[in-house]
Image (cartoon, rainbow, N blue to C red; front, side, top):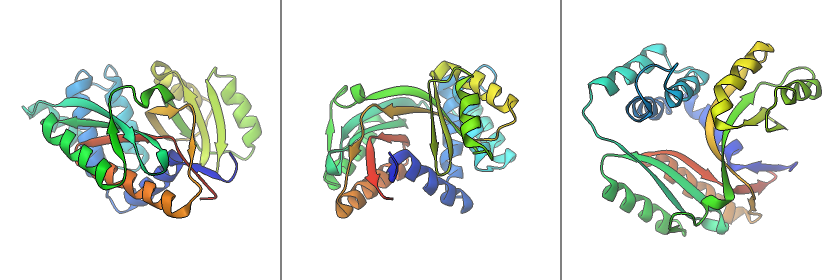
Length: 241
């Protein structure tokens, strides 16, 4: 896939820029609060979802005080939250899965539907696109001086897949092995830049027309910016980005 960029890579580069401006901290704080409420408490050692969100916050240098405030807010808030997933199609025929957390399902569903329709997409029913995605644990490891040797060592840890990209070495694992693999990779002395639970597309949708790809990226960004949306996954692939 040389010369191509999956949306996850494009989004990651945008997140780095946003983090530099502090734009992602409020989103991360909400994700931490949600993880406490829906993942089983405020102890990251027993709440896997919370552990992942804290690791992600630390990766973009979110201050410790912000993290602690988000956890404390979850313990005193009486807000009832519900996790919802939406599936649909966007510009260029891309498949999209939106993960949201809301205190008002009807409101959020209507807003997500409007975003799809406004941007030339359409919301679909459960299972319409999720068959093309797999739940994975994801780690982005900082590249060392000898990437080939590094990749071989990572493979020896029993990971499912390893791929070298411009901004690091992508490692994919079974979701419930994420913490264990992270610990083992750090034991090798490597720096982990990102840890995440993702939905990885089995087949990519390549969009070659620049106007169509710009439209798709604008659509995905609009979804990301919706207040209740936590994560957006897609099979978009753009040549030469």
